[in-house]
Image 1 (tube, rainbow, N blue to C red):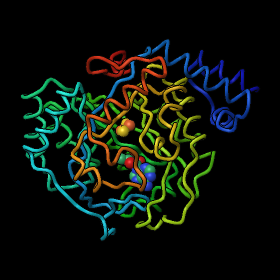
Image 2: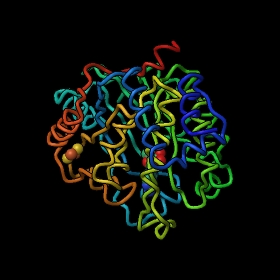
Image 3: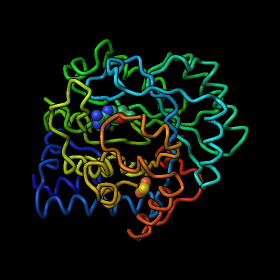
Image 4: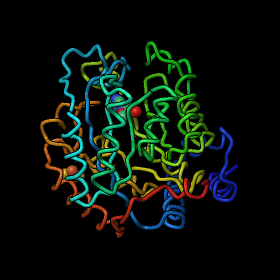
Length: 349
Ligand code: 5AD
Ligand code: FES
């Protein structure tokens, strides 16, 4: 099958075989341009020209896990650790609201200091103070905790499965299991969260076959939001000497998923902008419709180092917002108004 025919099939049927996806991932030249152009058209048709901004609050850099790629891994004794107090988190959420954000993303390492009760209290306080959607990105918890967070007012949850290759998953996530990860994602979906998931591009040992499988798994989990980013080696991790992930494959994966889940929310990730100065712009031009600027204080931003070289790390949150807004306008797009719930979620509901 020709790439042109595969793209057409994706548009009409919203499903592809693994081999077809692999051909798209390997597309070059005119074929690649067509993939990006089509994804951009599908994005425009299904989610419009609005780009929604999410205010990211990284509230704790402690993590009990030891993922091989991540700078927050517990074995990284050089990592700078901090925990924000409840009131401080609520203050930052209020500041984000004043800057115009209508979604805040509460992200942290897997830090059990934030017990069920503490998390619920933070969620409730934010909801009492400002009218924002709350997205959690805090990793694996029990069904009971996920339910309590939802009942307290959390709207959405982000958790990448990172890789669908179970052997690689085991290798890079000591003490964790792929099965458990998927179970958590299914719980979240069943609890009515708007569900975000996705994967890393370019983990050492990962093949094109694996990436095609990753794309199919996002489709199978029926994600409302899709986070895909290139792996960036962190000097204080076991993968420090590995090669970084490919920007090109990241863009192609975004484009393919836009065709397969046309009404999902897809961010142009910070990691993409870190590896390529125009990465976020490129992402927005081949299917993405979301950007997630950090709204935290500078003193914390510097300490939340998943990977090195993160963009905007020295920028004040107000400046970042202005910068992103001008990027959006320069692409002929608009800054989204309102909470920007995933249209995929609305349709399913
Ligand atoms: N490079 C790129 N992305 C990373 N993440 C963690 N470490 C790295 C890294 N070294 C991503 C993971 C996680 C998200 C919050 O950050 O995919 O899900
Ligand atoms: Fe942060 Fe540009 S988005 S400075």
